[in-house]
Length: 286
Image (cartoon, rainbow, N blue to C red):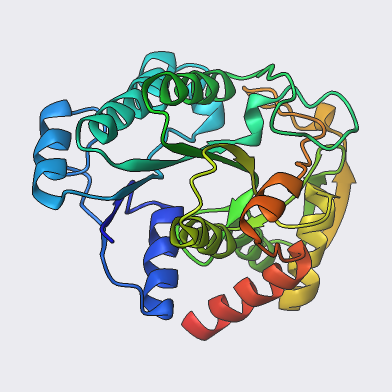
């Protein structure tokens, strides 16, 4: 089976490379940003023509949430038009698509587990454009799996865990938001789930939610990072109002994973267990 990974240099792309290598899975291709440019239809056509993929995993996205509020055109090109371009290429070359989306498509103003068919009401440009990308994928290509995830981190690329470890080593005290609740997701776990879906042969196409298990605030997450890594820094809980950002964030975005677990038999790790593993890997690679 030939699997093409777009956005290969990003966090999830690097995790897919690590997991597939660790599992001894062959057939994955990780084109560079030029060959795998989702905004260049000619490049995509040439890439698909050469690789003839059975599956495509689209990890490419504009994810600078605050910057997106002032960079609307580029954000929409990548998250909407880029997703549509990939879906069209998949249709033309008879490939199935795994498209990665986000919990930011939800408003997050209710304390209820978010299900796949709940009403989407994004409150940021990033969320709006990711939802538009979902719509285009659904409209263009029936053979799709859309995976919404949240709070991604890993030993690769820039993320909250690595930022906290760096700041915690440099400072005596940090203020962390305590009134936004969600679930951290170890991107290694998400990569494994994606490969499990592909390997299952189950053509139950549609939208799925995947994050680690549990629900915490950013403050709780930071405290766990410092505790597990033995980082000596004082963490102070603060409300969102004391740390204004350009883009508004969902207050509560804990997703219900029942559908993906039942459909594909996937076991979802608890967030803290995965965080321990990530910090272990960071220490090994230090």
